[in-house]
Image (tube, rainbow, N blue to C red):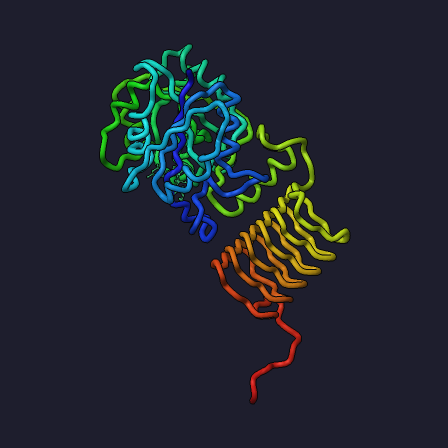
Length: 365
Ligand code: GTP
């Protein structure tokens, strides 16, 4: 039976305030929590046992899957203190059932990818590898650690983020999905924080172990930042990225209990959650609208996320904005791009306008 570990213990700080109360893998993208998309993909690839390596808000994972009835064994390896990516893999490995030689899939819990999981496991076995890493090519490698390989795909080294043009020796980067020989997992030091990228992989290469890369041009996106998160969700809806949980490609995914005014435009792969209300002449473009959210007449949202139970006032404009839950943005606000608004925040009507306001000054002079 194929087994897998999913790393889901990170705090997801770059996605706050969405992750203040929900771990990143449990946030909704394209109509389901991200982890459910991953689980569906793993089951399609023949995985029969998944271990969640949890830490931050660990109990919410057990809550999410308590009624899961499909044919998949789910185990939970909870870290009292976060052990880092390597320590988390080591801690989860103790719950695996397979023999020492078995290939184990390890996935970051925030990567949306079109990788063929069966193919990478087959390749790993054919090469008798100790570890096989999925590698992806990025247009601008400066923000990533680099993973050069030789002509036979053997990993040569793990390089820090390049600081000069000369240091950009490849455009291949770690794509956050690996196949490990089980005995290699068990050899990671136990009970302390370990980084798989900075410690485990470089150590294996230095020790002459069989570490290979599998570079593909499949769809790939790390959903760790707000913009990547909304774009990943939109890509699932529009069919650029695929998930067994998303039906045919469309402009928008609208929950059957949401109420959309006929003059509103919901597009670009947007998702509208349960019981949300979208008013007249509203534009929702490539955005995620949570459950019980109200967007009043004429408001416009582009590349934004609005968490549950929030209100966006009429004629307000949001671009690349993250709005926490239970927030209230009054009418005619025009927010600068890339704002993150805390859960429960209240902005009065015309409280923030990039282009100024025409209303009279209410103060007494
Ligand atoms: P940021 O705080 O925004 O950087 O997000 P993050 O905490 O998720 O960190 P990062 O994106 O670097 O983590 C990559 C993957 O490893 C994610 O799936 C995390 O859930 C997971 N992860 C990171 N650190 C730990 C850890 O200490 N324990 C466990 N179990 N998982 C971790």
